[in-house]
Length: 337
Image (cartoon, rainbow, N blue to C red):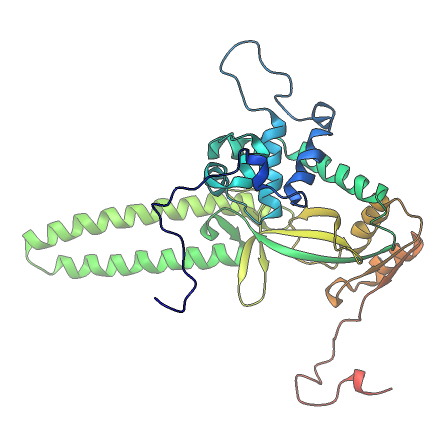
C-alpha cells in the first residue's frame, strides 16, 4: 500500500470537538433553515400541535419536524424512512434538531396533516426572498413535471384500459370453459379434480368481471372518464416513452437565482391550460406590476396568451410545430422566411 493516501487506524483514539456546533460551518445552509423556522409563527400558519396537550405523552414540536422536512427537501430526501435514518446518523440533522430522532411514521404524519400549513411556509419564504431583493428581475420560467403517485398502475382505470381488461377476462373465461370440455373427456377421477379447480377459477374471474362493471358505472359518471381507486386525485398521464399515474406539478422559477416563486399541483396531464394561471400567481407572489414569462411550446395556446396579455404579462412561447414536413424529410415552414 505504499505511494497511496493512507487512512487512520480504526483503533486510534481521537479527540473530537467539544461541541456539536463545531461540526457545522458558519456558511452551512442548515443554519439558514434553523433561523428561518424559529422566526415563523407556526400557530398562525395553521400547524397542528403548537400548543401541547395537557395529558398524554409529550409530542415533538412542529418546528423540529418542519426543520427535518425542509432539510429533506434541500437534500432531495423524500422518504420518511430515509429521513428517520438520517436523523440517527447525520451530524447536520443532529445539530438542527438537538439530537431528536422521530420515527418515520411521525415524520410522514406531520407532512400529511400539515399540507396547507407547509404551503404557507413556502409563501413566507417567497416573501423573505422578495424583501432580500432576490427577485430584482421580473422574469420567470414556467414548466411542469410529472410526479408519480404512490400507487399501482392497475388501480387506475380509463375507458380503454377497462375495455382491455374486460376483454382479457372474457378470453380467460372462454379458455377455462374449453379446458372444462377437455376434462369431461378424461377419466372420472382426474376430470373431477380438474373440473373443481377450473370452476373455482371461473367463479373468481366472474367476480372480477362484476367488479369491473361496477367500476365502469363510476367511470361514466366522472367528467374526464378516468378513475383512481387508491389515490382519487391521481391521473394517468403521457410522458416520454411510457405513461405514469400521478400529478403534473407546475412551477414558476425566477430567472436570476432559480428560486421557485410559486407552484401548483394539478392532475391535468397537458400543460397547455396552465400558462395564465401560473403567470398570474408568479406576479402576485413577486409583488411586481409588470412580469415577463417564458415557457416551452407545450404551453402554446391562443386563449392563454391572450389572457396573459390582458393581465399585463408578457409571455414568450414558441409556436407548436403542426406541420409533418420535417418528419417526412422535407423542409418545414421554419426553414422559409
